[in-house]
Image (cartoon, rainbow, N blue to C red; front, side):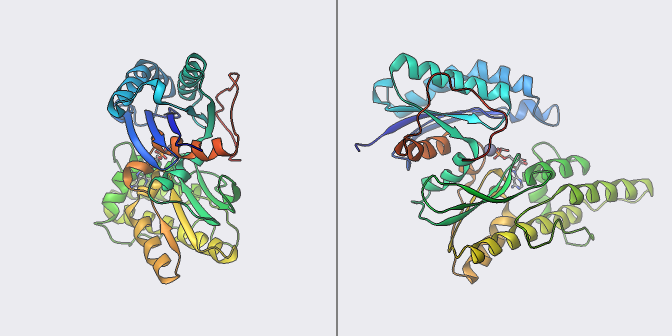
Length: 334
Ligand code: KG4
Ligand code: ZN
């Protein structure tokens, strides 16, 4: 196959992003327009506000990306889009834009699952080899995925309640940190001590996770201390919370690598930006001879480059959509 330039769209939450990726590995140009500053005012993403901003921004972002790449639609071989899961109103804008360009310019349309995108962000770092275990940790997902081969996903475990990023955001709110909470808690955890006693979530033999008990313990502890007139040591609470999260994610990931006889690990999703998690996995993988790939920060949070990378492999597998493609708020990775 000659080289393939894919124009990719990502609009599942609060980032409007368009990217051009060659052969699933080479980033030609990416534009990410984040709405973080807008949603910060509300303490979290407001779906209606997000979709309105996607509408306003999408054509500007497409144009900017093509300009940045010094390309026109003639240089594009296929169009890819995140069709789910995510906020339905936000997803619809990307899907509609991608369908329109696919129809107008007669380019194949490739539907990409958001989590497949997060996973394939790693292919922009180095060529992914198989089999591997993917630890997917984001605002909406906490999953362990076994990949026997390219673009084959077997979910072996996941959260039974809150996603890990969601727990970070709620804990941040309780201790008075701004949205998005993950980076703020992470930063604070680094200057704190692990002094608070918090429960370890679902510390068992399964590959499942549960973060709501841990989150509630932080909320209760914070309320109780406030009622007693005691100051919360925010940095120590952040550190204790983060250590419990990192411990359980690392423990179950290492168990999966061992039991599936796999020596390759990739980490994906917004929480892969977490310094505590990165450091602990680096240490454990080094000790256990596991080849670890974690994307740089810019590929961890939502972006269209990862969608363009995944799309190339979906395309090679013949996963092409027709123009009746619809956005899906919930969708299993397959
Ligand atoms: O992947 P992402 O951009 O969006 C979803 O697909 O959900 O992930 C966003 C999540 C948010 O919950 C954010 O707080 C969290 O990733 N996050 C972090 C860090 N950076 C972002 N959580 C912990 N530590 C971080 N450094
Ligand atoms: Zn995401």
